[in-house]
Length: 53
Length: 229
Image: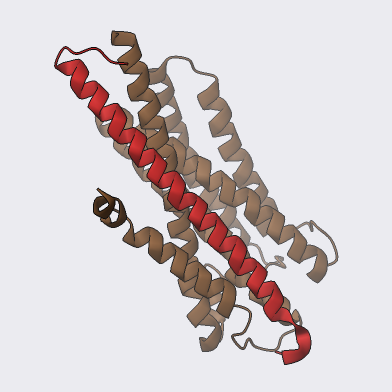
């Protein structure tokens, strides 16, 4: 590869996009996990005869 | 709690990230053989990854449709549909990236070719699966009918994407002589990016699928809670 081709700039851009997508996925994953926990706590309360929401 | 968040099921997601980061960076610098298509050969790390991702997702979908028919557990139907959804996403990206590459290699976005036409027919089969699911209101009926269709769809997809292009002598698309892609004929330097990249794309697919399944489960559970309230 020609070192003057500045392709490394493109690589940097792609790497940023990739990191961005993965960070986004990671936070989405965390949010889903939090809601999962809430829903399972709600259904637990429900099974014990409590009021939900 | 934070500890738990970080450890549980995180390693393979982190692996997907590291593999793809490696592929996106080193894929541009690894020496590739000097062929007619020049540096665009590097597209195999990304374009072919879409098809590996799609194949992994559709295989998962197929397996879970069979499992559903053996026990009629709703959870297995969920995996089947969400795997197929992500598979179609990869398929669309595979078609678009392939068209860009084709335009610059063969001079047209689409050429009459068994591999390309097969991939398009394969997409239509799965779009039919989505339409079929959307057209049945009863959830048990929907799950059963679409599981049967899905098994049929996967076999047809294999025939159109894997078998027919290989049997045809006139295909212009590489990778038709035995190996699933041109990968096995790639130089050893290219292979050290290719296979990690393929694994990375497949793991990324599993992650998105995993999220979609979990969101769907929450929705179902939430509906149940409301109904019993």
